[in-house]
Image (tube, rainbow, N blue to C red; front, side, top):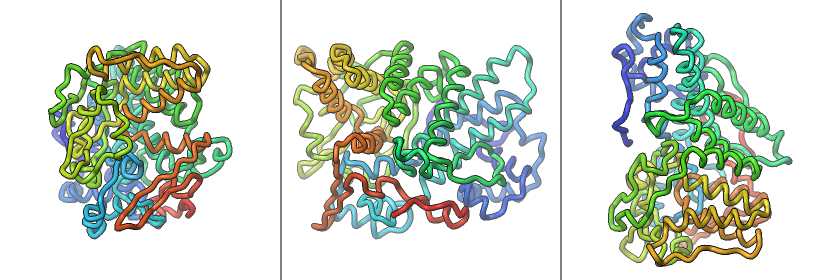
Length: 484
């Protein structure tokens, strides 16, 4: 796992993660069923020798705002999440039979990924669920629960408010990803269907059930709306959320909900604060990782742990997608590298590494231009849509080779915007959500895989567009499973 060279701190001499688990031991008697639901057991196991010690409250309980900030600053838990399935199940890539079989024959997460790759109707995976609920959800809730008990000078009220806003943002970011995987897409017909469990406290002995789809998105929107009032305009690190980041996430959420007017407005609010684009002419097309981490377009840094399926060169870029790039489009050489056998792998993560380590899923300026352009096009504002698209594309094509895009109608503008969205945001963890919303709008997209000459398909409307909860969670919690 990538360790950021930023700001993970030790609170009172203890690593942040250990501090939290000691706090859990002090506050509650945790039975195995509850541990399985919160899914802390595997993480806690590594700290077992410490958990056997008698906790000393004076040295383990956070007592200052700086302590709580340090918990949110645990980048390896809060900003790098194992939500690999959001990339595993989409159509950005393929793997050949031998590579798939080598993973399917293994135990654990590799076999889980292989089964999810072919949308096996019984496929599940504990890893991503565990990591997401253990780190960004639990850590955020821990901070939110502890904050009212922290004493601080009157002059630090703004800092306390900012910490609350950051915790709400981080929890919401996790809920957004979980909602794309484990509940039906947002639509009028789906509002009363089961959503995700909304864990809103760090008290592990408090029971929880599945919220509805409507309640899931209501919680996300309400928390982000509050966060927008609380977080600062500027932050010292891109791995801390500021107002631009909150507006960017709101834009992404509303896009997922197909509320395009609100999506465009929040993208605009983000772009009013940060709108710098990278000129791809200044990047090396031969570099292994040509786009730097914390680059000028990064509004908020977030990344996924990469799946073995997408590791270079095992994960091969969809050939139709690769062929769609013009030779003068620099993304063709900056995003992809050639493999043996006339296939290509992805190398264009905004994480500053290859997709092997941590494909970027944070908020970035290019995404905001595309969301605003799509909102313009859907509202009939053809010229505005093309202006936003061209602002982005001129930075992506070779110098003096770019001819501005034009459109004679809003429908044509929308088609061009969505085409470039597909090509710009590859491996960002956004394609799965796009496919689900496009099918709600009648796109009739069927996904296909071929393994050992057997074709596997995922047609529109299939129940497998919603992943199964991990069997461990269903077994211990008694929550209803998604249908098959």
